[in-house]
Amino acid sequence: MMTRPEVRAPHRPPPPPQQVLSQALAYAEHGWSVFPLVGKTPAIPRAHESGNPCRGECGRLGHGYHDATRDPEQIRAWWGRYPNAGIGLPCAPNGLAVVDIDPRNGGLETIAGLEDEHGPLPGTLMQMTGGGGLHLVYAHPGIELPGKLGPGIDVKANGYIVAAPSRHPSGAYYAWSGDGRFDHPLTPWPSCLGHRPVPPRLRPSAAAVRPISNLVGLVAFVLDAREGERNSRLFWAACRGLELVQAGKVDGAAVYGSLLEAGVRTGLSEAEASRTLHSAERAPRRTGVTA
Image 1 (cartoon, rainbow, N blue to C red):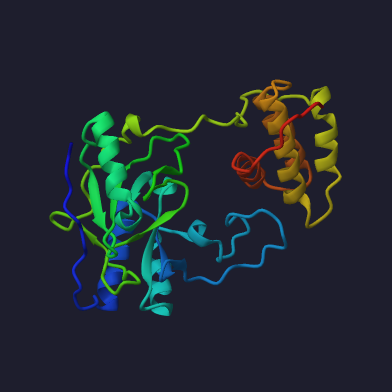
Image 2: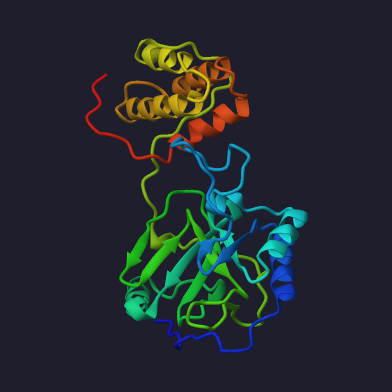
């Protein structure tokens, strides 16, 4: 079993704001999108979304980690406005999957049990969280991952993590372990830590797909959209279409092709309609579909 000593980021003088900005820019240059945090919360005020599902497609800021960017001018503007902000790193968009170990809630015992069962976890980039915890940063495998591995261990794959040199609520600071660098190659996600079954997805089709009987009503529902409800109707129809895919009643390519065409005919751009369709893949679905 691989043993790990208790890890605590040192209590040291806070880094000057310019150092935090420089690190945010370094992450962006490395290829990681970033956004500013107040504590562990996105600093940018939440945008008004009128109840419609939105992950930044509207072009306005205020969508949490979906605002993250690699644009250096935007990053400088953010830290000019929030000079004491911490740094947020989205996980999946940056290709990261993070094992978040919290010793206070049994994380060290859980990781010891996993290593007793599967052998030592492969070494990878590590970050001390400042509160005595540890982030093991692996390369995201591109599949759904479990949300927890046991008491005291969360998997951060669909959200974000706080990155060094951000300040932890304890007063300590996040820090990359070892030589303090973050740009080491990431180890692939360990297969022994598992994954979730992949939900049905809307697969684009190379050829145009005509609406089939099960989809006629959904297409009509989208086409009847008025100004201001095009995205919400398309999102709802995609969710219902995915339920039909899950029930084996229709092919995912047929759903994608039919609803994409319908969304474009209502006035959405193809890119916007496609984003809405793929947003539906992450939404919970009903069971017992009989249509």
